[in-house]
Image (cartoon, rainbow over all chains, first blue to last red; front, top):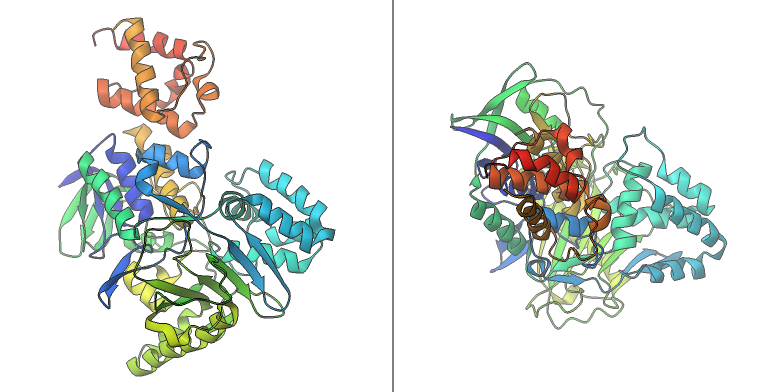
Length: 461
Length: 83
């Protein structure tokens, strides 16, 4: 078997890349290791219903008229109609540093500006300057690391505000600890604060099915439960792949979306990338009775909280750090279709190795998962009001769960802290897209797949 | 293909990329990208559609030839002479 393009990984970046390519050249094969597509943004069935994994909210909301916005560029590139996404905007989200300060934001940026002007008046002029910097900054030019924290501090002269601005941006897309690169900060600031958040009216399965249908309608092929054992190459020239079932597939180009080190492993080549700690997370889904009123929830969509004196976005020494995290209320988007379910989702930073060492003993692993849910619960209740008595089902994912289902090394959802922005890892006809290329989030990862295809592969075929 | 037909072909491709594209005020000798809010990603669609529809292989170094409607027609006229 021979194809012009082989894509490894059926997550959103791989799917978008495949769809983009198949629009013009249908002869493309997408390989997915799992039985189900979606990667980090997928779903599973439990308790007679579908649960989404990954998706809290989609960042990069933009009205149709803003043609150069990432969302609209992506839709054009994939020829997907905006109405097929069935966009529902967030109500309102919040950054809450307990016993310190709270900032509300929505898809109307003036709310966030007013909040900052009211609550941090001394920093407001600096914030305006920061907005100018964000407006003019080109985050796509490769530059050495510039500390976003330092730039923020210089502008705002207020460590609390600096940390409050960083908290959502780190939780929704930073693979590095304690700081962000300025370019990544600008991308995330635009995606979350200047643009905003939404979700589709259907489930993530509907979105994946839509992408897959467009792809197969163009003639694209997909193979699930297909594990690549080795990438076949002579020096820097790729010939194809060997699957674990012994099948060999030849190709002209490979797009790998499985991560940089994961790709080097398949090439049987050492990765020369610097090794930095990868960030793991735990997430608990609490399904609650539909009639539950969250007394202090105020219809918030997402709450990014910190309860410690100082906000620390870093790998904890223990299993989980409950001092900060994300609380997501997936029903709180505008005009969502009626659903029989209501959820509270909590996310915290976790330590992969600690979880790994527990795994030897299934019962202690399971009881640790229970402990996580039961410790996270009062943290969420303190913010939302009580709902423990209304829980009908709960489930907890650890970094091991994520590693098992997505094959992301150490279950690190944001991948390698070292990003390869141009997708070039030194081979003639193999490129990298997805998490380790550096565009994050659902829209970001899809644009990653599309732009690497556009930049490196389509013009050459 | 006549010059007019090539012109229509290009406009048809652009309309396919962006159904709201406004051709009424389009100046044929000015860059398409500035006038139509097209970015480089959209621009690649023109190249790829020409390839798909007319088996035209436009090398990357010739992409600047497609900058304006006039230059598109000039560049494509000999290539699509038999189309």
